[in-house]
Length: 247
Image (cartoon, rainbow, N blue to C red):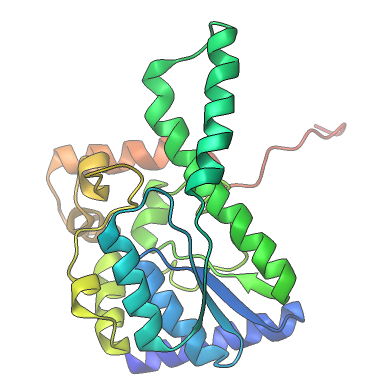
């Protein structure tokens, strides 16, 4: 695992050099993947690595875990509370749609959650521009294959250092990097609404997804869920369709 970590760290340094930037930043959520990436960028560019905490009606545990990750790995930190920004924006969107009698209550939770992710992306890029840094993504192989990320939200990044690794492999990497145990062992959650967990929302587990990606046998029900998620989210993994006169 240390050899793998060294290869990722060197790759990150290469990305900084090729992009002609000064450093790297990552949004630190208090979850496993961002904790791993925070440690990786600290190793890659010790003097130019930034962890961004962006509370948005976040659970107290998430913020506490994010603080612990940053304190332990030693990267610089900035906190931007987006709660009020989100409230103002989403309230205006709701009001306008309700006035037009076009508000879709059944889509409220997803629309709200995606706006949160996209506000965090916008904040990350505003900071990246200020510091001349790259925005580093936290998607792992399991999330990428299933499309379990927000398009132009947490999926809106410059580089993806752990996209080749399953959730279990990321967990092993976290232990090697010294990520706090409470972060390594917590239930994965995007913290987009109270009580939300990744596996409940997906309808399957990361263990099943990891096994599927490794070519192992899993229950038919889980396989169907995973394959359906992959098909439905194909657009997230592709650039926007472009009209060409030659088509």
